[in-house]
Length: 367
Length: 255
Image 1: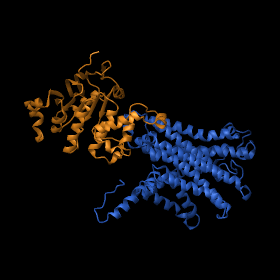
Image 2: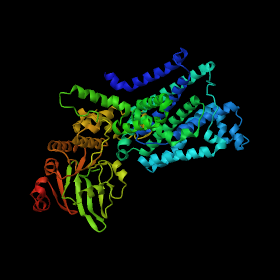
Image 3: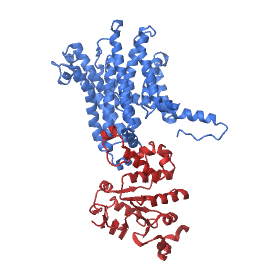
Image 4: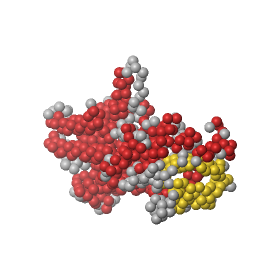
């Protein structure tokens, strides 16, 4: 019992990973109808990774970023540019032709090489996040002001990506690409798909482990301290703004990695992954799963997307947005801890109250 | 070097806010390892005086000199706020501000001296010596058994003691407390007094307080302020016996 209490989140995560790892085997055994389920779960892995990053800055540090779609898309575009150049053998693409560009633009050139691309997937979102974070946190922009600015920046980036269509293919985005491990279409290429799936799963495990490590150290306690009493943390002699910049950059880098994973499964990237709506969806995953618990972000990302996948096809498609909105509101109003909060705090308190029915109702231990 | 008996000298401090004198020619000295109380009715200038010592407010005239144990004297007036903290003067504000979602021990770990950088907080664990120090300090304020409790679930008094303990970890020479017993019940107030008597062995304590029972219990020296001027200074018995003090302060509110 004590073990479950202490290691409950890690056990839960292990179960999720084991189930995911079994999926390709089930597909081989003919227990799944098609490879689309595996592809979808691959995308969910990417979402879980970005949710972990978002949880670090929102759940732990209390900075609500409504613009993480930007970092997700930046990582995604880096990956997609490499994959596109693989298709064209390093030559200029058709949309560049249409845009009147004769030779491969300078910004595209680094993406001819995989190692450089991998570095840039992390470096580009990090750099942008550093510039944004450094100045905002130094000027002590916080709370709702930070959220609004992060939203505005995402909107600006979205407009730029559409305006620069000779370089980015505008609204259409970068399409018709294969994965890092080659084509995953058809049964013949199933091995490629499995490699991709397991590599992505490994990335999720690594990111989870990194996040768990960070929050277990004094560093994690400081993040909570900054969330609960920023001024007090300054008085205790900590340089709060550099801590905030650090964690913001880290979570942007994680979002970039997630975006790169996503592109492989999705087969394309468009500016719609950069929109505010998309960024807010990410926030909803974390809120419903449970803020301030790494496992909550993972659960939220998987659960919401699984629901969406199963419900939004068919008759539910029109009301799905309303359902998710309502669930979000109820979570914020009544279950601040999300699903993890319910299981960890409210359920034990409820069971405790049932047990003590005859005695004086115990005060909510959860609070 | 001769260790000066006084740890703090306040020389003819005057503060003028737009023509209104909050403090006029206040001159006193705080002796090492004592509990020094500043009392007086509302608006007497007690909090302003603390603000001056920690450089939150600039005086119109006068100086405050700090005599650290093994170092040269330092003039506090004109120094930057954060520098005064590093010189060894801690201040606890009226409202308790502990980190509610961390445990008592974690709160203490964040208050340890040094190692405030990002890399240190990721890779460095507090040493055994640090932890011993933390538990010893918690013992002093009576929170040793509560070390693993969430600070948010502590009682009001316990939060105040935790904050005093967090100040003590910085090894200050002077701790300034602004109404530490405010909002506390009798037993808690008494315990706070006992804590002050215990920690004065390691540092000097300056307190602003209204509760006379608390002053009687813990004070070594009491300075009475009234309308920005010093009315008198002495032991608590002298102060209570003084006719003027009775007239301006003690007579009110049935204290």
